[in-house]
Length: 190
Length: 190
Image 1 (cartoon, rainbow over the protein chains, first blue to last red):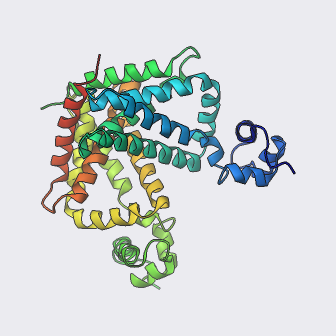
Image 2 (image 1 turned 120 degrees about the horizontal axis):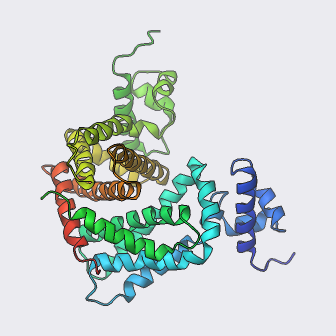
Image 3 (image 1 turned 90 degrees about the vertical axis):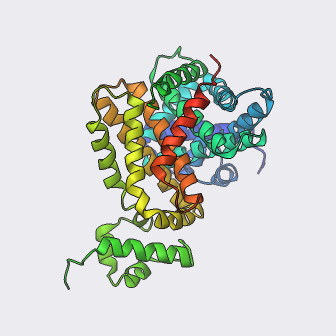
C-alpha cells in the first residue's frame, strides 16, 4: 500500500463533513468516512485523533497565523490593535471557505460534544494571542483581557458571518464588532 | 435506607474536591467519593450525572442569579452595565468560597476534560446573559457582544482572584477589569 495518499487530509475532511451533514455526527463512523474518501481507517487515524478532530483540521495553522501576525505588528501598536490584527487575519484566512464554515457550524450546533471541542479550540486561540502579546512586552492581565476580548469579538462576528448573506466579509464584520464594542464600553458607568 | 440524606450534595462536593486534590481526578472513582461522604453511589447519581459535574454544582444557581440580576436593572441601564452587574453579582456570590475556588481551579487546570466542562459552563453563562439582555430589548448582536465581553472580563478577573492574595475581592477585580478594558478599547484604531 502506498502510504502517501495525495491530499488525504483534505479528502477526509470533505468526506466527514458531507456525512455529518447528511446522516448526523453520531450516526457516522470513521470507517464510513475513510471509505467515502477512498482511504483506510488507518490513514484516518494517522491524520486525526478522533471523530471530532476532522472538523478542526485548520486549528494549528490558525494558531501559527495568530502568533505570526502579532509578532509582525509594529512595536508602537496598542495591545488591542495587535490582538484585533490577529483575529482579522483569521477572518481573511477563513473567508474563502465560507460555504464550508456554514455547513460545519450546522453540524457543530447540533452536537454538544462538538461544541465543547469548538470552545476548547477558541480558548486555546485566546491563549495563543495572550502569549504572543506577552512576548511583545504586554503585561499579563492586559494581555489576557485583550485576548479574551478579541476572541469574544471573533465569536460574535463569526456567528454574524455564517448567518448573514453570502457576500458578507468576516474581517469587515470583525472590525465592525470592535467598533460596536468600543461604543458599548464607552457606556460603562465609572 | 433513608432516601433523604441531610446536605448530601454539599457532602459529595466536599468529598470529591478533597479526593481530586489528594489523588487526582482520574484516579478517583464515584464509589470512593460516595464512601468518603458516607453515602451510596446511587445517591451520588441522584445528584450528579457524572464525575465531572460534582465540581460544577452551583451552575444553575449562578444562571438564575444572572437572569434575575439583569431583569432587576433599571430600564435606563446600558446593556454593558447590565451585563457587568450580572458578573459582579456572580463575584459576590463566589467571594465567600474563595478557598474552595482556589483548590477547584488547581484540579481543573490539571485536567483537559474538566477544562472543557468549565468552558461549556462559561459559554452557557454568556448565553444566559445575552438572552436576559434581549429580554430587556437589547438588539441581538449587541447582546451577544456585551455577554461575551462580560464573560471574558469575568474569566480574567477570576484568574486574578484565585492567584492573588486571600484578601482580594472578586467583584472589585471585575470592576477593575472593566475599567482596564474600557481604557484598552479606547486605543483601538478607528
